[in-house]
Image 1 (cartoon, rainbow, N blue to C red):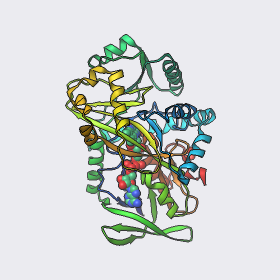
Image 2: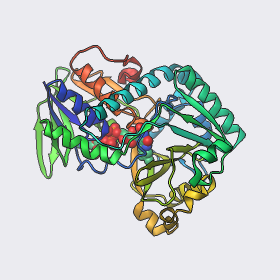
Image 3: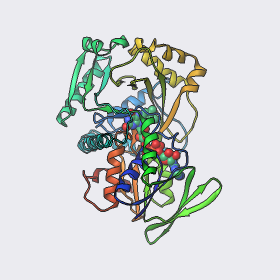
Image 4: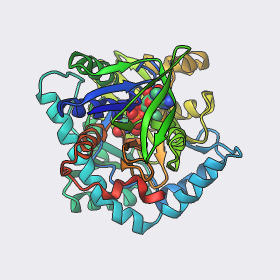
Length: 427
Ligand SMILES: Cc1cc2nc3c(=O)[nH]c(=O)nc-3n(C[C@H](O)[C@H](O)[C@H](O)COP(=O)(O)OP(=O)(O)OC[C@H]3O[C@@H](n4cnc5c(N)ncnc54)[C@H](O)[C@@H]3O)c2cc1C
């Protein structure tokens, strides 16, 4: 079977990994060079703790409160866009307690399954992307956030996850270099992290060694369809128009997937959500654990020789501008929660706005309308499989999604039920 995968991010490459193991002929079409997608500069968390879908009552309430604050981590660009309005209506409708309760188990199962698959990659001995299983801490400052997080921790335990609640003294002992200023936190012990840049550098190499064709700088521009199937995928290779005949197409183009779905007469409500990060090499003050500041929504990931700091959710049609006040808001949060980290020379240097702009990376998270990924076949094309819409957890879900894609493609029973992620739920 010849499978054409559109998109060489973590999801597309993971699908290629498993499809190649099923003896498929795999061709990945990637419009860039595999170094600039969302799968690169992210925080690298594998987060079973993120079992609450983004579409939840808490996010809507917090988002509305933040809309007018230029330094806040949440922003909806006020532009007239049918796609944004349509997505927004569906997001608001989905953001109910019923949806959160219904989604927690399937999302937790997918997260745990995906983490187990990622561990198998490491155990295979062919990867070394600094995978570490030690957990992730949610730090909070206010009694309200503490109450909310402890409630979440209880739900996590009900789902079988391991959590440890930490008080202020324990927080200080856990992170001595940070001069931490929090009320306490919850350590989610099942979480892990990896260095995504290394993952995205090693995956293509492994795949190409195994015979997967990765065609860089090849942008898919349309499809030929006949009898309910995609019979040809058109793409632009430099300036030449070319095409390829697939048996199966996997659409894994991250935030660009909605537009490509339209080319095939399918419908996926999706919105890009820009996020920023910057990385300090060889920091003098280092953390022991990855963490998220609950109120500020800022995340920090330590690896042996570097520290990455990231945040923000700028929802709206793509726009490559870096909004300096928001990136500065991330630094301000580090100052408020962890002055010891903020005082690190590498972090302090970023007080210079020019340097900060220069060092800031951004990526577009592919937001589905209900916070659950789209994994499964489309409605109008028998040979089109979606693997997209992974929101804030695409790295966490990459290995699991790839495995499910290969199982669906080859008609095998899936390792976990895929019905909650069926893309047809909106068409
Ligand atoms: C600041 C930040 C921090 C994050 N932290 C985490 C984290 O800690 N843990 C986690 O699990 N997730 C995290 N995420 C989310 C995660 O990065 C994404 O969910 C994930 O990278 C999405 O992967 P993807 O393969 O779907 O999309 P992408 O990585 O965006 O890949 C899609 C690819 O498709 C290509 N493409 C698009 N259109 C075409 C076309 N027409 N033809 C050919 N190719 C095309 C693009 O060039 C791109 O390379 C974070 C995101 C951000 C922004």
